[in-house]
Amino acid sequence: MKSRFGVSIIVVTPQDHVDAMAKSKNHTNHNQTRKAHRNGIRRPQTNRSRSSRGVDPKFRKNSLHALNGSRKARAEQKASTTS
Image (cartoon, rainbow, N blue to C red; front, side, top):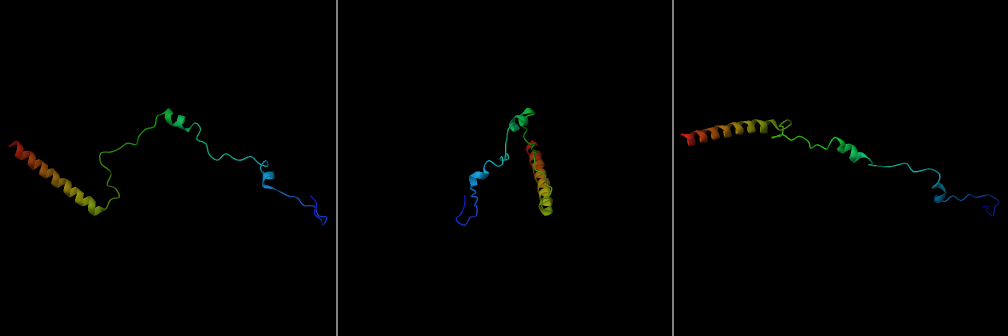
């Protein structure tokens, strides 16, 4: 396309660049569920009581004493019912 000043002008539209390069693949989940189920999806192991690691030391000490007190009370109750 020529302008009226004798200079050639190239008009570039966004559609001209569409075919220039292929899009790269962003995401696929193909075959992942099959791979996961081949050995089975296992639940994480759960323990009876959670670890007290990282818990406030004052709270840990108190819970230990409370547990011992509960054991004593249960033992006394059991002894009084049997005799």
